[in-house]
Length: 219
Length: 219
DNA sequence: CGTTTCTTTGAATCCGGTCAAGGTCCGTGG
DNA sequence: CCACGGACCTTGACCGGATTCAAAGAAACG
Picture 1 (tube, rainbow over the protein chains, first blue to last red):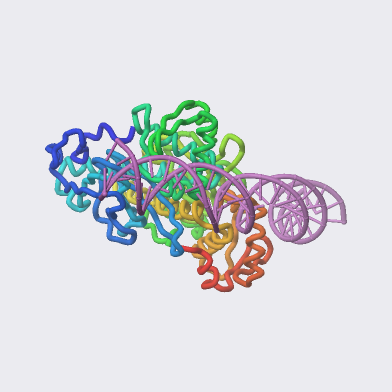
Picture 2 (picture 1 turned 90 degrees about the horizontal axis):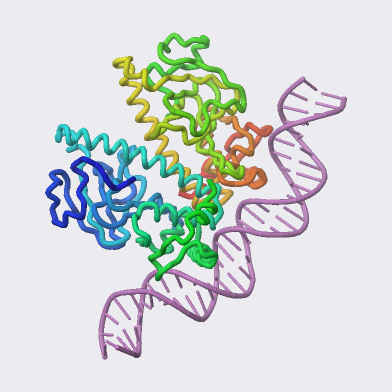
């Protein structure tokens, strides 16, 4: 639903393997390591980004250190779109990632391809809004257990395999869900004890009872 | 910042007084009473709405009755924009309101005016995203006291007078802030006791110490 | 002026947070 | 291959902010 089928220059796929994607005349491909900053809050936002490989988080810091994660972005996702001239969130790589970077202003020079891209950007903004609204509901009116269940289901929906990989640590999950790491951990333990999910190590899980989990999500 | 200066057919202003605005060739003006539904969740979303007079809330209901308010809209605000074909929130009038309703598909027929409108709609969507992101931070990482303080400041920033009117009841505030009415009430009492705001009746207040309130907001 | 609805206040409870160990995972080097 | 070390995760005990339950008080309406 998210990562496939964009017939546009931005659709560089890691599957091609090459360092410079042959289907990719626009933009620059950059590599980031875990924790690397891709752009910072309050920086000028004239670039658009696409995850070619890896995973990214956007976040905002309150003055006293509290942090809220805006969203996570995976292979194929576009991010860094801002309605204004400045980034309202910081973006950082969660794991080793290749990011395609395009100057927004140059898109217009690319004729049809540029137009297709502009359309793609509009679609990405729309998707951003929808996800943010869903996130709102989660933060405002769901319990800790429902939050964690929602998160796991959402993540599993993207991956196509039985086994889903968590590219982020517990602290990132907590800051996305508006919880503490301890609470996240406890809920994961609980969901596992109920036989709804099963973890293999800290960052691999699969959903045992989809319906049971879905019942917890509250919608 | 929000309600003035749109040089477009949608800028019907209540100040003109007439039931049918002379500057308003497009769209239909409709009247709503408190609690009236303007559109429902999961309804088709081919219309765009503008508050000519009054105030509106958008909200979403979980199956068990929990409710999250998406946002409040006041004079001049555009709402009902959806990235997809269906409304993801319900919209209801908070007080007696006049709403201008425009079919989105017809905009294209209006040439320059239609184009101006499309641009206006893009701007409104952008603003929507920014506000939703701010709301996210509030729900995820702010305390009850900070939430209420943020809310009052945000509302006061829109009105130009000393005295600000709350067009919504405590339950609506609570469902916007992810709290209960009791907690909202307690925080209001507390802020008043600290001399930061002053209430005149339940729905009128003014800010006594802007800086003191702002210090509570955490950003 | 009485009725209804909304708001405030108080007391008790509980969910999630805080603080503090203890355990696990995993990369590194012996 | 195993031992070590550090980062990350889990668990437990306790605490506290927000909710819940209950009732009193104000405001709005006819």
